[in-house]
Amino acid sequence: MRDPDVATSVSEERARRFETGLSRAGLGLVPKLGRRASDALLARLLRLLADRHPRAFEALRELQDARVLIEPVDAPVALLMRVGPELSLHALPRGADGLGEAAADAVVRGPYARLLDLLEGRIDGDALFFRRELAISGDTALILALRNTLDGEDEMDLVADAVSIAGPLARALPVLRRNAGPVLDRIEAARRLLPPPLRRGIERVEARITGALPGTLPGKLPGMGA
Amino acid sequence: MDNFELICPAGTPAALRAAVDAGADAVYLGFRDETNARNFPGLNFTRQDVADAVDYAHARRVEVYVAINTYPQAGNLGPWQKAVDDAARLKVDAVIMADPGLLAYAAKRHPDLRLHLSVQASAANVEAIRLYRDAFGVRRVVLPRVLTVPDIARLNAEIDIETEVFVFGGLCPMAEGRCSLSSYATGLSPNKQGVCSPANHVRYEQRGGALASTLGGFTINVFGEGEQAGYPTLCKGRFVAGAGSGEGPAYLFEEPTSLNAMDLLPELKAAGVRALKIEGRQRGKAYIAAVVRAYREALESFAAGRPVPHIDLQAMVEGGTQTTGAYTRAWR
Image (cartoon, rainbow over all chains, first blue to last red; front, side, top):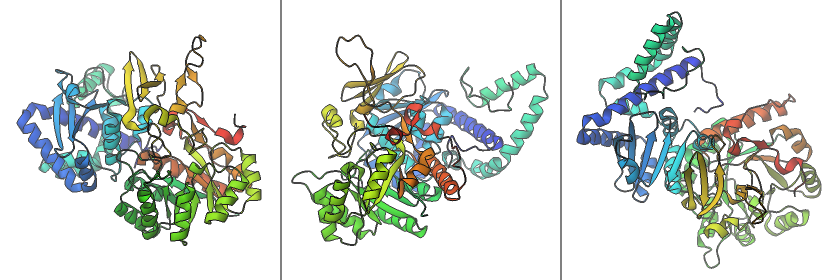
């Protein structure tokens, strides 16, 4: 379990950030599959999560029918989660037509990495809210019910779960995780030797790969390029 | 010298495991209904959850206490009495209660069940505490958060049951168990329904760059851009005192600060305190793991005679500030 006061190594943090960026890029691709295919993919993910976390998903189905919009402010896509007997998950392009917010009983907004940490139970939602890193609106009781239900599970690993429905990638993830930290450390060391214009060019490409919107690239870790 | 016991909150099974693994001596929790004072959506334990929690905790030599600390409603004693019966059946180590009628029921029906007096009873003087001991066999009292350390020392010198005090978390500045602010605004109270400022009456609204928190339609606070936000608990709201006074809104009861008495361990030990309690059954497991771990580290240093380390828990607190509360100042 992780919290803001427990230092993880720069290497681990760098790997987590990379993984977060990739998963955000993956999420960005989901609506591009078309409504039917993306709904089917997310339904499959929900079924898998329900198998792994039966207590939480039973509780989500017992809630009254309602919709929560989970909106990462630095990603192109938001998720609309319907709780209650008709539990489902939909991906929507963010801010395209405001449909998501209009359909939602409650909205949770924040940086993608923080929302992922929160959904996986790695960080305290109240502390994020107190610090204004997370904004909520609409039905507060619904948001609390969702938060408490997911937080009642031992730490989730949504990235691994999402990847596990993508066939061969599932086998690659543990290897990638084992090696990502050291490899990224070496890349970072090499990056510092590059001339600034080239460094900035690489950063722009990275931002495109990880799906960050212009001007919303997450803050850099100590030791990363300017 | 006996060590302090560290009593830690859990609102979910995962939070209980986090508390146990981080170094709790005992974990307190509630059933999933109005019988406890943290009756929030999605929170708390089914009977099966409690059975599993007892197994997990006892296997690691950690105790489990069940809070049944709201006041039963006239004509509807069933849920409270069933909670007591189930707690005894599930072999929890103590129940934490406030209502004299319920204490009498527990003492009579389950004479082996250890009884703790909840902070909700607001027992703050020698006579009241002796009454609960003599009448019901209460073994420990959780003291209200309105006493100074010298008050606690004087109290402990005159009573022969254990005392437990809050050391970290949200502060309730009222006479607990008697506060009706939440009832006034929402019709629901911490004392009967187990909800102070219930979430289904809470709304957050953006007002320009500011964030307004409302409860039952009343604006409780407006946080400026960049200012730490808080939950709209009525006693921690900003209000205008005296219409037409020209004064702006201000904190009339208490600022949204969090208690942290880690620096007072020597004084609390000298005052005869037996157990230290962390508040926050409504908080996530990451909060519980971080705070319990920090306090366990502090207690180990203290027990070994080393200086208590300064452990930064700033990221966890409401309002962004910490206080030693009433412990180091006379109550107003």
